[in-house]
Amino acid sequence: MEKIELKAECDKGYVKVKQVGVNPSSIDSVVIGKDQEVTLQPGHVLYMVNELYPYIVEFEEEAKSPGLEAHRKRMRSSNSDSVGRDAAQEAESSTRLESGSDPSQCSVPAQKGKDASAKKESLGHWSQGLRISMQDPKMQVYKDEQVVVIKDKYPKARHHWLVLPWASLSSLKAVTREHLELLKHMHAVGEEVIAEFAGSSKLRFRLGYHAIPSMSHVHLHVISQDFDSPCLKNKKHWNSFNTEYFLESQAVIEMVQEAGRVTVRDGMPELLKLPLRCHGCQQLLPSIPQLKEHLRKHWPQ
Image (cartoon, rainbow, N blue to C red; front, side, top):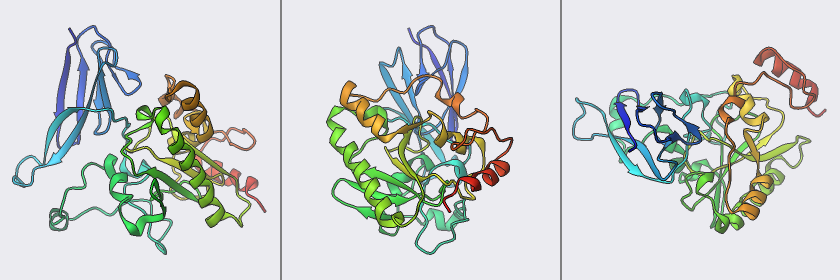
């Protein structure tokens, strides 16, 4: 029998998971291991007994008890797949930059008590932020019947958009062969956005998905390769776009076409810890500031 101990840290917004049984359990693609304790963030998927039973944790605000615990734990079966970030600023986006706003602003202002409680509905944990952002007309760059494009709140380059389907798809793990045409359409829309908003530039672009995304809901990154952004601040940011952690859009399409699903190999989180290496000439750089200075050499003249 599978045995898992769960301890909710409501004030911190996560659950501690300890495997005490022998049957294998995992969080997303990471095996927990017997007697090991890991953190389960909202949006993560806890798989029990060889991935036969998926569960996702969510925290909801208690509207009737503002003076007591602000959250309660609710576990439910789900096919969702999302890996939390270590700080809100390191995520892709839970809100978006409006036209004319300061591109150097890389954080979301904190909600003040009364203003936050006056919201008509709770926006939930930041990992669910994309679902909110994609519905806001002020944040939309393009939309059609199948997808919407929004500008990343924390852009890691001069141009950084996200293409999201209106259909409910928690992650690439939920993608099957029946979504093949949708993936192709997302890619085509990404290329159209590049042509419309950056067609006159000489910048190169890549389109792809993070192997283990921070935000729930499938989203295709469309990002220029200058990486000229104050929001690019650490090794994780860089390596998430410049190692095999970044799954090329066309490769994902081919994988679904051939296998009917997207398979993410083990060890992906370790790629985020790799040394900083220039994506243009492969030179190793000791720090983000030095990497950014080096990247100027590769910017188109």
